[in-house]
Image: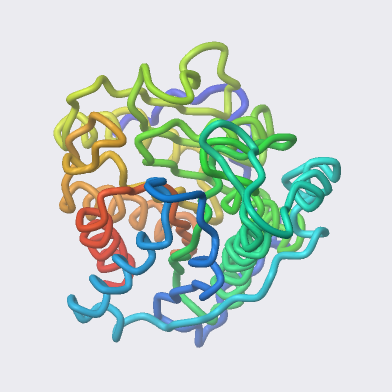
Length: 335
């Protein structure tokens, strides 16, 4: 097979491992870890808001009904500390989120994004789960991990929260792999229906990070296709696109970039709102599409990253479709 064309940034960063990157222990676990926290369900943004606590209940119900709950290793994570958050966010943003947290009622972050008195703790639990999952996968305590968390994170940038997001869970986890565990190259794969603009804001032009994203465009947040950094592989899909278009785009654009970059760990922003039953978007994915893309990511991780994957829940608002899609995703991770 002819080697894919590489951007200068990707080609420059795809260097041989220095030997400082942790190796998986000889007796590393083969389980998929499942991280969540009961306080993630305490955050809510008002009656009728699509990013609701019932999302986690729907996933839990489908995990139990499918039998997948018995095949993963369950953990309840602790809270992220400010030292963890400021690797991805400015100290001013972290302080602003703490200061905005209300003692009662609601505090507005943007027209769609609201804090109640439990939101800050839920956001810290979500980032904490991503951190704990990263540590477990790096140490060999788990082969890979899924974080069933909310609020989501991929719209939160270095200095802002928006789009239901306060802290960027996947960026916090990726920075931990780079800064604490001394990885040289990590990849973020984002298949939410919305572009992960916050993750792009944090990692644009960072030679240690390749971000690969497939999303509907034009669509909220209405960016990701112009003047992108060379370490961003953004693949927009038109409204009405389904699994055939997703698979072609991932095969033609995303896989060559991932293989050229040779990531030592992969982080997934796992949004399931591109499902055909989810009216938050206009794509036409089904459960088999999420299983397929997960399997392709696993193949890359097995080739270059000793199987190391941490996946964090992002969107997905049709409760039945969300639960079924997460089960398909986790089944692929755990197989």
